[in-house]
Image 1 (tube, rainbow, N blue to C red):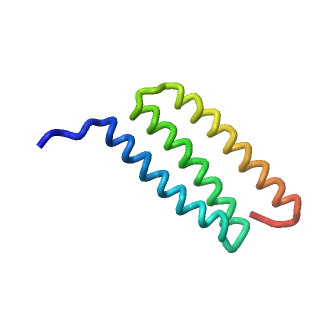
Image 2 (cartoon, rainbow, N blue to C red):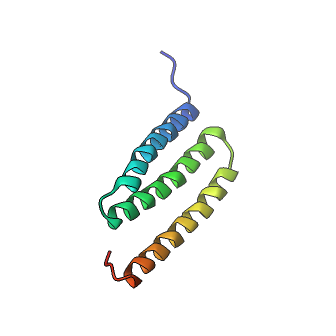
Length: 93
């Protein structure tokens, strides 16, 4: 039995995270409360960062890591902005 190349494992893991993000997208749309939606969008953003990191390792393209870092920073700022907007509106996270 021949070993599976490590690049294929990274790409398969990235595909699995894409499927997870699609499932979370349903929760972001349907979620019964604002907190559910916020958490789902935040997890989708985190999944995107992980997918980009796995693609960087699987495809041997280091620029994916730069994009992942920028996306992680934007995801963090988006979480802070939505939280502030929700609290200012009278809701409590």
